[in-house]
Image (tube, rainbow, N blue to C red; front, side, top):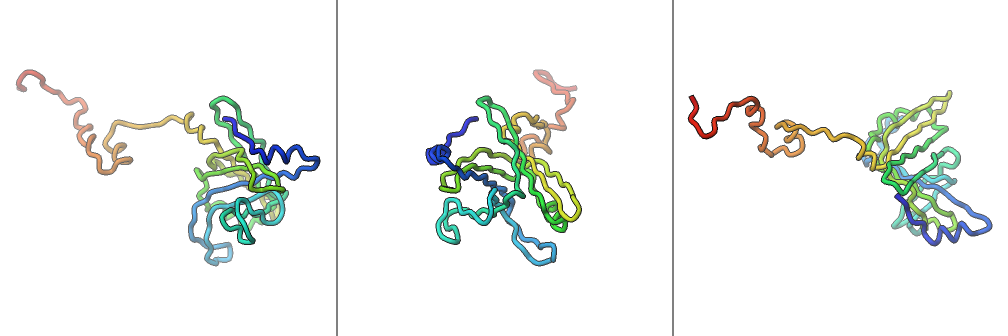
Length: 205
């Protein structure tokens, strides 16, 4: 699936000097928890970009009103190449965070990450709001590599089209039906009908 590039990004790419950036949205659930020291903390979506310092996209003012404030990860954030074709084909992507203190690994392991939405953007620092989305999908796998006192966390994201390649297993049973529609009784007697002899047009003996 192809994507359109904004006019602002195309114009910026024609400049003699360009300052591109990548930004990532990891849409984790908002929940209460504790940090490594046991202090209460609220977890939620994670916004990062490939530069340094904070970057406001789509907002105004120091508090980035109406937009999203991205945390600068600099060289600690690396992204794989993002590929798309004109065919109906699911293409994945991966991102890696390095230099993470091993003390914080437990927080990553406890986070329910699978199936959470992941978006990757490309833009120019000259006009951050004129970005273009180059990937959207769902987080799939997490790999952790420990290197002494620091660690690297790599997560892969799959395009939602990958669901078309997965078999959908449904069964004609009362249990399967109630797993989706708890009050539905349409298959309540399906088990009793197995190998049941039905007399049609004549009386039973």
